Length: 480
Image (tube, rainbow, N blue to C red; front, side):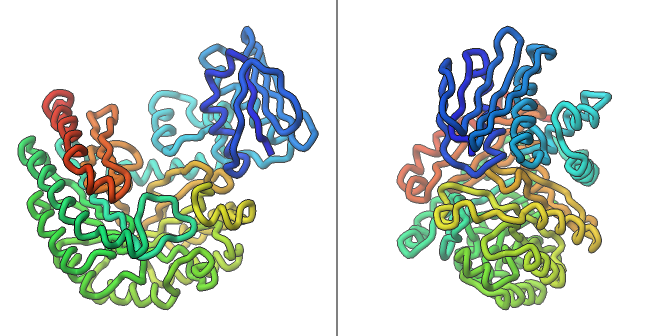
């Protein structure tokens, strides 16, 4: 396993991308960086770009391989060093990376730009970026389904995101910004009151600049950690945004152990049309292993309640690569989920986060079988009438894979497409929320404080940043 990275002075300018790429071959262990220093010992990679002569040397388990090139243009040095690294790692016995040398979060966005600017796009993806045929086809599927949504957007339409960063307990794989436990839950009332004040600020901005809210997304955490009366109050506040005719209104009900009929009725009566019920696995032993405090039975009961209340668009998340989940049990889990017939199924690949309790506990034993599981999910869901409509990748994701949102025909989430493709302004309220300001080409961000106690204690200071949002609409964005 590579532990040290060495660079000559020229190659060091490409260190960021090379480091991101090499992490796709192994778990997220700490790497040491050295420049202008001769490598020594074992388990290292050495990158050189001396006068146009590129080389990569990898020492792994006392075996050394070197790949060299001197035929590329300076503009392609970074990609060529990445390709040489991949060849060395494959000679060491590593499986070729399915996304090749692409390391970004949004591969579909990047691949779409390649189709728009190159005549030989697929050849370039395959031979220069080393993307596998299967991932090229996956990207093509997503691009095709996204096109009608992207064609329907305009700069006067925005989305609104509301963060409810509380959970009844923390799952062991989680590294998201969320607060759990009795102490954190005591912050809910103070947090909620300030959240409504932040939404007042946004409502004023929307009105002053004649913006139209296109979609609303209440995410978390677990929004149904709030009481039914708090959900009523939140939706009443959202009424100030003139949301009667928005195209999509989503709330993550999330954890089945927080779902009650009165909470779902509060959401439905307030105009929410799409909810998430996220089991992550339909295997009780897996749920116990990762700290999910609910059972498969509760998942089924939550679906029954949601259908009774009248929800006809439900998303469910499932994770490939969890501990205690075998290839066979994942397949059975997915079959059980399909019997509940959610309109959307999001298949996440476990992200191997060093900060998660799961990584600390299981280490190298997590993420096993993820490739088989995601391949099985693609085939099974396609057969059952689900199609991939958005995808994204995370740092240290198992087997260099991705998270894929699948939908039944006509049930794709507009918000999910917009946020992953960076094609719409999103005003984001709550802690950990990141407002995205889209001018038709580029995205800038205005970020809220990360944790609930910061959000509460520094609320006034945080809202001084809202002036950047006003400046954007006043000066930087020419609305059609």
